[in-house]
Image (cartoon, rainbow, N blue to C red):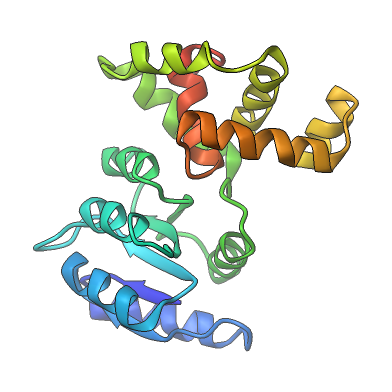
Length: 215
């Protein structure tokens, strides 16, 4: 994985925490967004732990650049507070989730493992809270586009998007809708394609913008 933070002490601390696991390897570090994009291209990490507020290219621009690459890594955004407005934009740009810098070692390790395993919605309660607050607070020019996207979904697909936005894992969605997990995964793949969404976080943003769920 790649560590991106403009504070070398933070990078050192995170590197020590992650090195203690034995199964997480830090292949490189970067001090700003420009360097992060270069090192993703050079090292092809599976996960990038991305600070938001940095000099030169910030974490938002770097996240957008990294997730646009042909084989993008998972991006886990680091923030000092869960109401950091840039986190919402980073999630919209394709980040897989976010992590508070104040979190303990176990939380950091678990978050990296979850994202590396392909789960986009880590810390569902906090992520839904953040998304809900910012969708409600902003004059949202994307709302009409989200509602147009809603019209392309079947009733079953709308039910699944709503369940995803409420933080439910595939197994729980399958049980609730009397489907197999494989069928739920197939539906979600089709929904991603219809909505041009990269992950479950972006489905959650869509669900709030389209009015399927409310803060």
